[in-house]
Length: 620
Image (cartoon, rainbow, N blue to C red):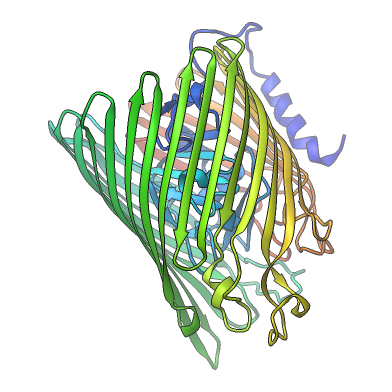
């Protein structure tokens, strides 16, 4: 047996030790099965009617995951790989279906976040303690969300509640001096007014971000972090079908990292979103919504040596306005969208400072007729900086039975060049164009009783990829290279997932076989494996749950030349929850139980065997 599957075999053996019946019940859905999905079509849809491939992580999944960060939670999901320069709090990247971190869109309660200089979300500043639910939608979604939705969209929904006001408190302690505390309350303060407030603090002494084998220098100090966050939401129901609301999220992460010996390095990232929104059902068939939002992404670095102090800060502010109309036509829905988004960049590098505005118009149609499901969408994004881009998608699904459905879809997408790729001195080129991609996929979905299975094959062909090119591909004067649209890539793969329940035993798992290939060089894209997956088994007792999880990945390469190998890894996690009283649960988790030494980026350390114990009251 290869080492890659030893934890998997061990987890299967543990699962087999639990008693279960042979026939599985048909009366209730698996606990992790979502009932609705919002992100796939920018509207509430029954999960069984959603044509786009998706995964939903609910509040219970988050609570028992014991994950140290959003990135650690995403690592456990189908179709996703991660890279990180050390432990929680350090710089991280999320790869969806082989795409890079800048090739996906991240939303928090419908507000787009991210850096316009580096591209993609700053994951270390997203507080897990504020999250109630995450929807992951795979594939090209530029025809609904615009630039950067090449690999997919990840939408984060923060905690909120209805009904009587109820408090929530959670606290926990773990290895590496980890401490977490969260408190808030949720509910209706009047018949037509609901409020949610939640604050969180977490910190860890951590471990050295680098390893002794790092060729860029090893610093044996501990690299910890402190993350403080606050979330608030107020919704006023003016009358039936009409509501106004406002929301705010603020978080600040102060994390240590390593860039050499005899120095203290810190990364301070701040994330803030604010939104005012309204929704009205003007007729039985027409609902309109309006949102005005601001998202701020600030990243600062601080370095101290015995003789020198340095500080630098980069800021992206996105102001957006979105007007959406949903028009019901029988069982079908016509959607019309108008949006504008302004990105403002402020850095110490004057050449980077500036703004760009993107005005967008989109239309989509979702058809639901008997056994036939279909959707079509088209969108135009006109940027003051890189011009006009039109994207579209079509999808069709057919139900052979109530349980079995097959899908096929085709869509186009693009990624906007970042300010660094356009204007950074001696690197950016102002004439760089957006990256573009064309994706086709087919899939089969089965859902009956407590069992769900899915298999999706996709092929995403990308052109005009922006890379750090050699001077030969750059305009005159770029002695040391530049950012340039010179590469092509094919991201293809088969993604399989499923879950089921045999009496008190729940099983879930996924595996991805992929080939993220740079067509220009013939090399595999950096830090992507050819196969990765997860498996988990959970046994329910009257007041407790016991679970085992495995996460495994094949070898990867740390560089575009495929000269530095990152070995395959396999992790085994164990957990248990116990309800000690109504609405009060204790969680114990043992992560990396076999103490696997592995790397997500060359020369950077990951957590060894570690434990976490916490208690949660109220909101999960």
